[in-house]
Amino acid sequence: MITDSTIWMSMPVATVVIDKDDKISDINPAAEGFFNSSAKALTGTPIWDKLAVDAPIERALGRARANMSPLFVNDINVGTGERAPLQCTLQIAPLSGFDGMMILMISPRELAGRLSQSEGVKSAAKSAIGMAEMLAHEIKNPLAGITGAAQLLSMNLSSEDLELTDLIVEESRRIVKLLDQVEQFGNLHAPDLDSVNLHDVLNRARRSTLLGVGARMTIQEHYDPSLPHAHVDKDQLLQVILNLLKNASEAAPETGGTIKLRTYFEHSYSLRRSGGDGRALPLQIEVIDDGPGLPPELADNVFDPFVSGRENGTGLGLALVSKIIADHGGWVAVDSIPGRTVFRLSLPMATKSPSQNKDTA
Ligand SMILES: Nc1ncnc2c1ncn2[C@@H]1O[C@H](COP(=O)(O)OP(=O)(O)OP(=O)(O)O)[C@@H](O)[C@H]1O
Ligand SMILES: [Mg+2]
Image 1 (cartoon, rainbow, N blue to C red):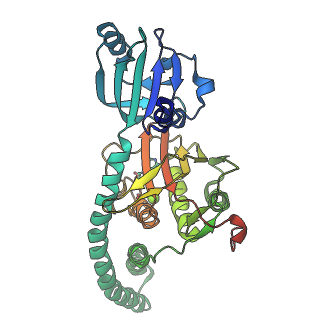
Image 2 (cartoon, protein in one colour):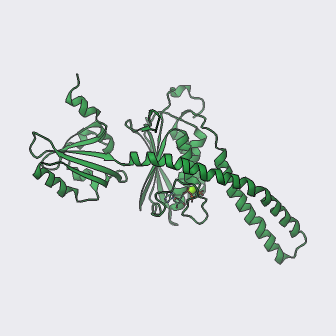
Image 3 (spheres, rainbow, N blue to C red):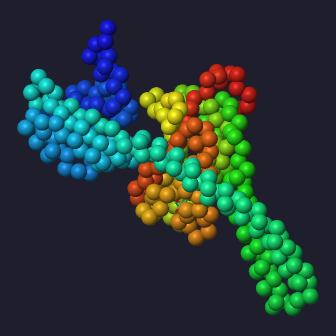
């Protein structure tokens, strides 16, 4: 028998019932996920203590209540105090039969937005990378010749002129390094999937990042100890986390900064690709930094190859992140405001039991 309560419990949209004093009277499981808190803990708390919005929504809610009419608000930023704001659509309606009570539905726009983005990124990345790979190959050969010739020349030169040949050699090396990175991008093999303990990968990435920037940066761990194993290629995932930690460290001011590595389980996340089946992606990893945030002019394109806001950046770090995560059938999202930048990875769970796992220790 389908009851109202079954429907309420299964509704995929975060929904809150608000009483006449704007206090939370009931919330469904999807809203528990959105607030990252239980219905028990939230019932009775004023809604505006739990929800931060960047629009005069309180007044609008009052009007909808007074007029007994529904209200839609598109594209406003909704934060929960705990996570960075998400762009959402809010739908508000009077709860019929209960005087002054309102029902509020919160649908993050992010899901739709970032899925189409990831497909777009993939094809844009493919063509740009394909061309860069071809160029990389073509440029490396003559460059080796140029470097060799400069080195031969340098044998008979005075020390002043040596500076010039050294410059040629040094700059050529820099270009070769860049081209190697481009080629590495093209050589990425399909992920070798295994059942992997994400915390092992995060710890490895954390330790190796701290070796380089430990004097400036603090990396905190906020792990969900009961997180199940993931179905991923652990070397590729390590590369992803290293790239995100590197970016966060590079974005931090001279005086240093703090990065949080957070993991949690979110059963309601799944991904539906065009033409494919829905796929559950319940394992979440967040890399959160307190730096200045993405440069606004790059914010829409950071996952594109060769987009960089840094003097010596190649702009391949996040393109690689995006490609690897897409190859895993996962997704990556970013929310950034000054003081809080969150890169979130959503990954599939391993089907094998952890005990069958080969080598994640
Ligand atoms: N955590 C962050 N905070 C602020 N800005 C960031 C952050 N992560 C990335 N960015 C911005 O996004 C740009 C693109 O990052 P990406 O890793 O793709 O390239 P890069 O770091 O410039 O070069 P590479 O990683 O190849 O050395 C960066 O140059 C930087 O401007
Ligand atoms: Mg980078």
